[in-house]
Length: 548
Image (cartoon, rainbow, N blue to C red; front, side, top):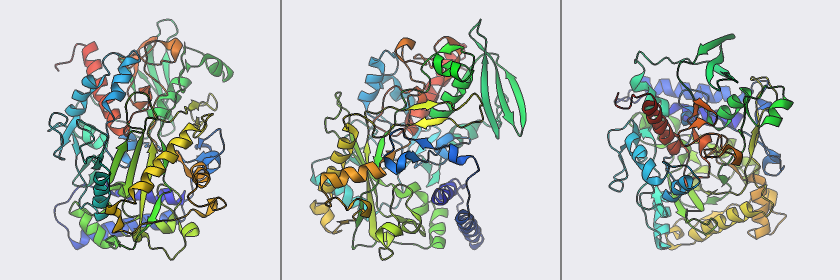
C-alpha cells in the first residue's frame, strides 16, 4: 500500500493547472508538496476496513489470489488516476456489439460521438478526429529515444506506424493522451468544469449513494438515498436516474436497490424488485508487466526540481502518467472476428522525474530492489507490458451483505479459464516482445532481459518459466466492463437495453463501462466518454430537448 500511495500522489500532481511562467517560488512550492507526500506515504496506513476492499481471485494464483483494485472515487471517476491513454478500440468490436442485438452501437454509430468529444492535437487520420470538443488529446513531449527504437523495430517487422484511433488499428504508435500540455485532463475537468455555473446543475461531493428507491407496482424509481457527512438524505426523482458509478459501484447500487439475481438478493434479505444478472459478466484485460530489460544506454535523468521546472513548462517526465509512451497492436487469431488480440506497451524508463521506482516497487509489476538488486540503476531499465485484449474468463461482483457500506466482493477470476487459454495468450504476447527486442533497431540498446528469481526453479526462458511468471504476476489492467451488460433479452443476461435503460425500470439508466457487453480492443476511458455522450442524447431525445 505504501507504493500505491506514492503512485497516486504523482498522478495527483498532473492535475495542477498550467502556469505559463516558472519562478523559484513555484518550484519550491511543488517540491515541498511532493516531498511531503513522499514522507507521508512512508508511514501511510490504509483505512481499517481497506483490507476488505480488495479484488479477490477465486483461483488463488497471481499475487496469492488477492490484489488491489483501485477506483477513482471523485469527480471524474478513474480518469483522475489512470494512465490517460486514449484508445477507442477496433471498429469490429463495435460492430459485434451491435450484432449481439444492440442497434445503434455499430462503429458507424459511435464514431460521431468519439469525434464530438475530441479536440485533437495529434495530426491523425482525416475523418476520425474532432476539433473544438471538450476533450483534448495530445502526444507527450519529448518522445523517448527508446520509444523511437520501439517504433522502428515494429517497422522492421513489417508493421506500420499509424494512428490507432484512425482508419487502421493494427500497427505501432506513440500514445495519445487526454491531457492539456501534459496536465491531466479528467472527464470532470473536460466536461464538468466548463458548465459548473449552470443553474440546473448541482454537484455534491463527499456523498455516498446507498440505494435507489423503486416502486414494485409502477416499476419506476421515485427517490435516491444517500449519505453526506454522517447525515442521510432522500432526493425525489422527477424524471430519471442516471447511474454512472462504474463497473463496481453501479452494480453495487442496483443490487442494494433490489435489482439483481433473485436468489442472491433473497439470501441477503433484500426485497427483489427485478430479477436481472447484475454483477455478472465482469470482463477485463489481462496484463503481464514483468518484461524488464537492462540496457547500457542511459535514459536522461532529472532530479525532482528539474522535473518540476519542465512540468511547469508543459513537458518532461512528470507530464506522462506511468511513463507509458508507445504501443502496438497484434492480430494472432485468438479471436474469431478479426480484432487485435495482443497490445504491447513500452515504458522507456522505470525511473521518472526524480522517482526511482526500482527502490519502492514499480506501479505496474514486481520490479524492486529485493528481486533485482541495488546495483541496477532504474534509468537503465525499460519495460514492455503485454496486454491480452480478449481473455476468456469472466468474473463477478457480489454483495457481502445488505449493508450498503460494506465493500462488495470483486472476483475477477483471472487465469481461471479451464483450458489455460489466457496463459497461452499472454505467453504468445511475450514471444512477440522477445522477437521485437532482437530486431536491428534494438541492437543499439543491447537489451538484456532481467530474470525473475522466484521462477528460476524452472529453466530460464522456457515455457514453464514463463507460465510460472504469468501465474505469479499477471493481473487486471483495470479496463473493466460488463457488470450491467447491454442486450435485448434479460433472460440471456442483459441488464440494460440499447438506450441504457434498466430492463423493466424505464426511468433508470446506466451510463458507464459496466454496460459494455464484450471486451474492447482498447482502453476503457475513451468508450466511457462516448457512452456518456450517447446517454446525454438519449435523455434529450426522450424528453424532447435534443436541440436545447
